[in-house]
Length: 215
Image (cartoon, rainbow, N blue to C red; front, side):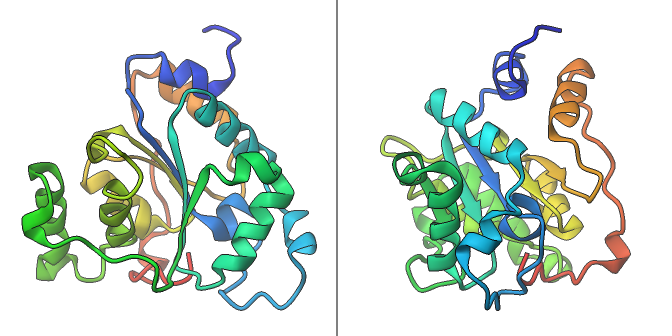
């Protein structure tokens, strides 16, 4: 395998193309879980940002790939400030923050293309009520982040600590990875390329909240 940075190797591996890199915030982009109620400073929280994701974002943006933070936290202003502190003012402006605020909605079914209609159909099944993770975030994101056409589900690279969210993504074609305490992003992406796209296992599904709350 080449000595290219991991995202460049993945981007050029034939497993893509990738048009969106989506990263959860709590216990994924940062090393702690804020529970959506962080009372400390953004500076303190920024100290826990994981260097792998800073590097990944820089590499993705260099390839003109859309980057987003997807979170169930309502502390969007805090998250935005952490991005500024960790990425710098210029680069952070290129990262979309999709949190639980009133700045976005899910498009109507009739407005979706066939790819995302299938995703919404999956989400609406009664058996998936507790398995939908952040699917609404992605449906909205696909139609707000691309000027020409919506992002294709199979072109999404997604990282989240919550197994329910990861499995929801995989069920809809995302390249979704679970971020655990032992997560080594460089090795994970290199192994993914070397294996030709074999996704690593997801653990502790039975212990997940199901609703992906504040993840």
